[in-house]
Image (cartoon, rainbow, N blue to C red):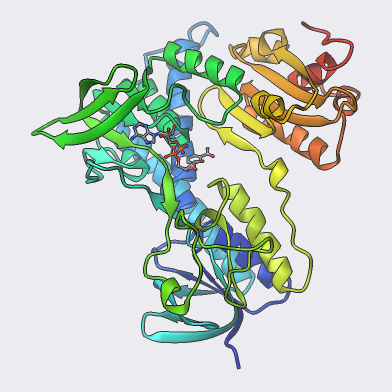
Length: 462
Ligand code: NAD
């Protein structure tokens, strides 16, 4: 007799969502988590605390730049980092406790400790062994190590340490101009740090629509971030009170270095599957260290599934959540499905950057005939009144059929605005469908409609 229908290992967005959906579908469910709190990297040391720091630093920036113009006068605000960290922690606590509440509500057992699959259908946590009809690996990811760099989470940090700093660094060096580097870089730039970002490639945020990428870099540069592109980092040396980053410029192979109080290593993450017992029971892995799965998230061992950062695909919380729900439905005998063509990506800088579907470069490479509808936030009344006119919406549609193929937004609330295009794409909508949908005035969303109008006879406010 199995103790559970499903045991999920890991309680991040993939694992906890999978657990809740399993319970909702009538499956006896347990979730293994070794941290003191539920929610995984995202809630404890990733997305949620960084969003709190982004929000607080944006409010500080707003207070020091636009309040006076809006007639809000008073003493200039100062930063109390200890208090800001306490606010950040309270945001984390509310969210992790929220998951605990949802587990109780859905009668999900939290098996406390680090789980190991000791045999197919068997998970050991501490001294106890539990039998399960199905096992889901949802163990997430960890920061990838970088040769020549030893992380101490004090002076040389990953995102985890960068969210726990006790002092605002005077000089912050960031290795990697990806999502983590730019989000945390903009937090500390707003709080007063001198931020330099070293990026191996010749552009920031690889994979992003190039036009958006160029605008994004310009805006971040205006905010005070310095970029060194084509910089191959060789190592970081810890000195007494500072660290020295050595790198070579790829264009001429010249050796360079940079001093900083804090060095943030943000060069990507890798699947976290340590001590899970996977090789002992013969679970196949990919060359990149991910758990190998088929189209239904099944590993090569019967009734063991894997989802989220531990498997192939973008390392995004919402991708993991969707896979968690789909696996739960599959285990319950339904037809779980994830549309990988419509997974939005958001960078929570100010302004935000959001995208879904294909980029212009991808369409060109595929030889697809397309049209572009663009609209600047300068033509959006709401954005202008909020000092947020920088940025634009770019909608890509099939030249013949007008079907929406992708959308890229840099501007206010981009991370929320993108979802109307996600829904439209799920329904196979055309740009005209979006253009003919009434949008309330004055809203930022009107910019989305205007970009859709620009795919046809033209935007109104352009
Ligand atoms: P990333 O893959 O987004 O970016 C890493 C960057 O580092 C790349 O631009 C890469 O070219 C560069 N790089 C790699 N090695 C280098 C070297 N030796 N020297 C200089 N540059 C180097 O990785 P990340 O920012 O660390 O984020 C990790 C994962 O977490 C990503 O998959 C990301 O999607 C996810 N994440 C997402 C969000 C979000 O959705 N808002 C936020 C945080 C993290």
